[in-house]
Image (cartoon, rainbow over all chains, first blue to last red; front, top):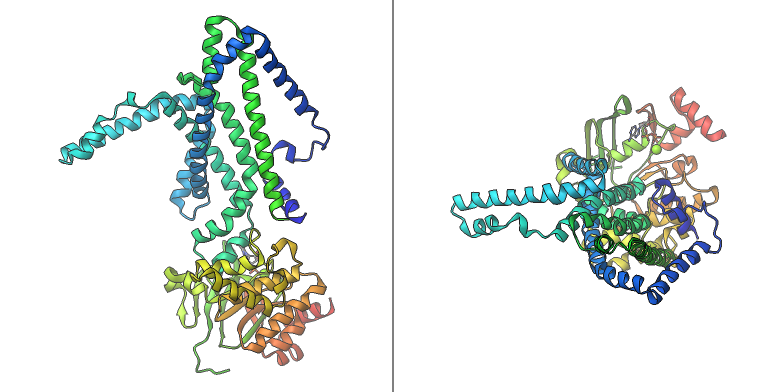
Length: 292
Length: 249
Ligand SMILES: Nc1ncnc2c1ncn2[C@@H]1O[C@H](COP(=O)(O)OP(=O)(O)O)[C@@H](O)[C@H]1O
Ligand SMILES: [Mg+2]
């Protein structure tokens, strides 16, 4: 179908597609999926029959809620930030363009692990100190209502899981900004011109003409980002957030059952990412069919 | 042509350069209501750039454009309102790919003219009947032939009830067998008395439809005349040369 062909070429042009969209791999029976499925199955069987595995699993799975909620919340914020910054990157205003570019380039130039340390332990405390200073200002100015509230915020009052979510969101915001930018730029210039020639404002044209087409083109890339984010959420364990990685580490550390702990951890991530890619595929197929 | 009228489009001593490239160089012209101006010229002679300054898609480096007496440079703050009175048809149709034919037409009616959905739909259907593709109302642009897409693009522009229509090589991207269906629609607009500025290489259409033909080369107007004079007795050698190239090829 012409629509899908066009979408496919647009995706290819921008290198936004996932590996299996690239059609480098032939469409044969998904043996890989069967194999991974078997591995997962065997692990869960082990959990049923082997008390060591069962023990480890029951402890580690307590972190699933944290892993999933951290990922989802951070991803939603990151997508929102990404959309705004992506729009900033192609904005008509030189100020917005530069602010967005600086943000994206800084994030891209620093390793994720280091960024998490920096955002959680430097940026957020710094921001709270700033709020305190502003609070003092208000107090001096005699506006004690807001002033008291602002000065009362303590650095300790921002829990680690909130810091983790902010760190992930800020980092991935830059990644999805690049995706949105590429998506917007993949839309033919003529679309904007046609819209403007009809009297739409830049923003109206963006909202009603460019973005709907751009977002459709970048959905696979955004989906890949969610999967990456799920995996990278394991890094927040260094902030002592009790996600599955942190719990597995603690468990392995004091029980010395490394094999059990880390096999289960691997299989848990693998299961989650597989479920996510299946959901992505379904969504993509549905969007592809919609216009037939 | 009534010289006492305010020109619908007036271009005064207009220049536009892109860096060192002088795309348009000191062009002046007037298009009066109900007049059809055809612009011809070799590729790169500045035809598109000139046309695009007429709705401020391109900012002139020098000179002024007046639409219905309103100087555009002094009215940029309401450029969107002014543009909604100027229809534009592009070489590559530029239909909104994610919207159906009807939605392509109703979008600007709804968000620029703030029309109700039903009213906008009614207008869309009227315009689609006019260009002869009401049966494709619920199709997506990618499901239409080039000729059909261009007719939708014309319907989309007409739906805004423009005072003037600008066409930039509307048939150049079409397969030969589809050119006629688009020219027929444009001919219909000529009959209805629409004011039009048309960049085209269709000499037959230009002869039949134009009140005035302008030949551009290297960003300048080389020759302008009524079509009979222009095609039968061109004054400049450059025009003769261009016409013989176009007509023999
Ligand atoms: N956006 C642009 N940036 C740089 N150069 C341009 C741009 N648009 C047009 N030009 C140049 O201006 C000249 C006139 O172009 P154009 O108006 O498109 O000519 P025509 O429509 O007659 O083929 C050409 O040399 C072209 O390369
Ligand atoms: Mg051109």
